[in-house]
Length: 233
Image (cartoon, rainbow, N blue to C red; front, side, top):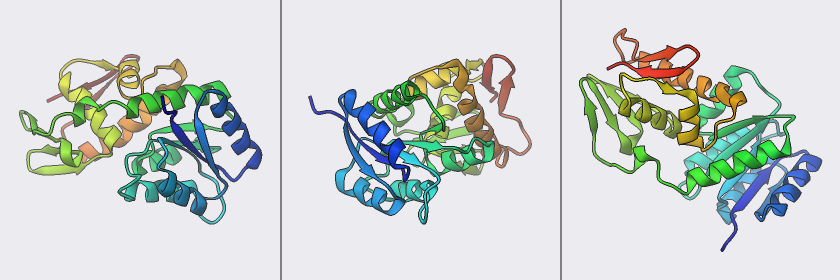
């Protein structure tokens, strides 16, 4: 069976090599790049199954590389795991809005990196339920548009990232009922570590801000404290 190909882009040679060695020990084929320009070039040439991408690099940073990957037809669907020493909410929102799939803050345990790599590869090998259908999904005033990753409320439309759309789709399918944060992590990312609930919070906060702009004042996404989230339609 052909092993998954992973591209590691990090200007820190020691970290780059450490990740490479550990991933190769797990049977992956690993390509390396030490700057953003080379990283994007290798991504286009090798078409990896996953990119592990550092943020803080000279000249071309990780955010720019992630944007280029998402804008290129041959790499636009490649999962991206972003590595960064930044842990502020706004930094995570910026990465997720570009289309980064997951976020790991340095310093990190190598076992945690491997768990996230496995989860992203597993997720990318299956078609999300929200993408398996091409027809419009409608309930009351809310319409989901899978082909464009958009939500329409009355006559207003909000464009979402693929992950935001998957979250909204799951809430939509369970509207009126609470969906736990752990279920969202399990269904979308394939894992549910207790310390990663912040990932869901960041996505929900960003998703809610987009929905609120087209909702005419109605609060569609309700937080059930200590539990999860509910879509009210």
